Amino acid sequence: MTYTYCGKSGVQLPRISLGLWHNFGDVDSFDAAESIVKYAFENGITHFDLANNYGPPAGSAEVNFGKMLKTTLAGHRDELVISTKAGHLMWPGPYGDGGSRKSLMSSLNQSLKRMGLEYVDIFYSHRYDPSTPIEETMQALIDAVKQGKALYAGISKYPPAEAEKAYKILAQQHVPCLVNQDRYNLLYRHVEQGTLEAAERNGVGFVAFSPLAQGLLSAKYLQGIPQGSRADKPHGFLQREQVTEEVVRRVAQLNAFAIRRGQTLAEMALAWLLKDVRVTSVIVGASSVEQLKQNINALSNADFTGEELSEL
Ligand SMILES: NC(=O)c1ccc[n+]([C@@H]2O[C@H](COP(=O)([O-])OP(=O)(O)OC[C@H]3O[C@@H](n4cnc5c(N)ncnc54)[C@H](OP(=O)(O)O)[C@@H]3O)[C@@H](O)[C@H]2O)c1
Image (cartoon, rainbow, N blue to C red; front, side):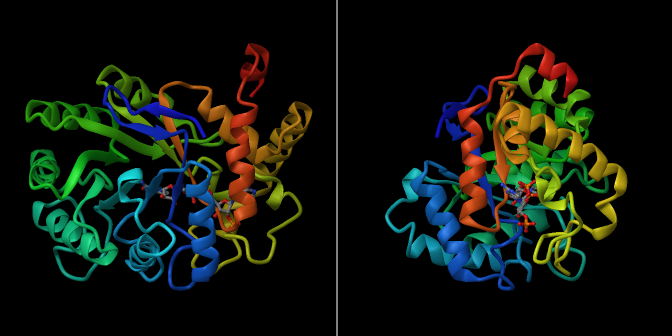
């Protein structure tokens, strides 16, 4: 594994992190999930990305990860960067969703309880909530840090102008934004329209989620939707309708390109993100140790010629 500083902070993140959005809920095999986490940590992945609502059911990924902290990861708390988030629907009523101070603080307390932690390393506002003043959401992040419940603050899925505002508010109160987390992959490049540039200008790290477009950026969907894949599972966020002919046509071209480079498509897709020094880390998901192994292998061939980059 290689590590890099997250923005202008003093904390380093592994270039490949593990996300627990899918495959770590109560609908999944605990043993399989634990072996993925074990393999990750043994191979230098120190950063584990969670959120209040990961599962299903919502909350179960945090409960399961909390169990692993007492078993496979026991004694390693100070070697881990654990993040969680609040901002999407989590519990019924007016306080279980959005960016209010009430919602963020309550959710963080619940997350700490589920994982059996005294603090998380990064607490994120999971999405920009236009119904809540941004000052209120940021104050909740600042106070979570000042109360010692989180070491750093982060934002996720903020439009560029709102991200700039967030960076300013946090910096003014001496809790600089550590990291911005957004979707970024070969098929979805909207963060190139200002988000990456603003993060760099403000000394904020950037971590890419869904770097494999939920698995589309692998060879697995080229011959249809395989059984047990995310698009096949009823609780998978990737819908069958998203595996369109057009997507498959583009993925097939990318797959041929990866083969020419002597890599799998998943490896090339991750390497392509990591070639940009502004991308601190890519947060991969994995439903097996084998997948994670392949994803870590992306680091072994992350150089692209200028010609390759323009073609891609
Ligand atoms: N901030 C946010 O709003 C937000 C949103 C989404 C995600 N995230 C974070 O980002 C993390 C990653 O997101 P993601 O799971 O969508 O990431 P991803 O890496 O794009 O997709 C992961 C899925 O792709 C398939 N896969 C992974 N490696 C593979 C390989 N080598 N070959 C073939 N298939 C492979 C697996 O699905 P199969 O089940 O098909 O095997 C795996 O579950 C999440 O866990 C979460 O922590 C954050």
